Length: 347
Image (cartoon, rainbow, N blue to C red):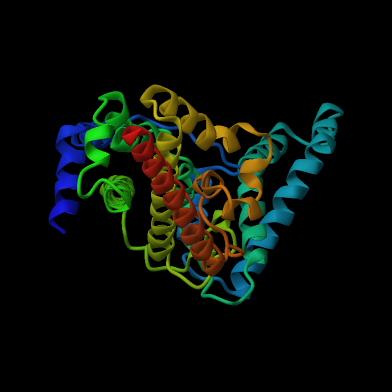
């Protein structure tokens, strides 16, 4: 334990990981204040009006009301050209035409929102308590919870020096021939980097959640995540639980990637090249068209899982087994390469 704490201290202070952690946190806070724009298939203002009007459990009466509104607006929009022609030939007065024009404007502004609410109500499968409430803020929050390009360079700057600084500083020979220079030291270095990265991932998730809570009400956090269309059919947890579970999944992914970076560093034995190769390898799935949406590949490439929120079809058991196997494999390769350095140092 004493040696492990020493490695943690070395990682945070000597390797300047604490500086990168603080920098990442500050940048996350700054970016949280940057205004963001979101595209929706409906009007958020109209959506708020209807969700406040229909607030509460989804019932057949509320769905019927929406259907009637949809039919009314559709008829107003489709019938407007005919009314315009009647106005031109004098069949209706200007007052009547003005009324039809006003109805058409309202219909054009609200039809897409009413259709969205109808489609949303139709997607509920009865496996959870379906409710109408203003969830656009949650939808926006989860939509931007994809791959963290701010966390990636921070993790690289933290993990690459764990082994890379030993090679670049030519201290490998002295370390490897010491009492703890074999597998034990390699394991402790990997564990230290994993602990730091795991906690940093949680800190970043907590910062995003904290900023969201500071701007929006928390009264709907306890509602089923199934009420949100972009939750991928996850119905058996609350909205807050959904975010926390997703944060845990992402923290595990970043931890596995930390071990992967250790492996790359022990293989390359060059800090600069290890940084570049690790960056390209981790970000490659994002650059390949369509790979980011392939859920099966997520069990092999952690970047795919980090690209968005988990879905109902996501298997936690498969993910957990895959994470353990990958971390163990990367760790074993790292230790073997570390030992190989020892043998070359003795020669």
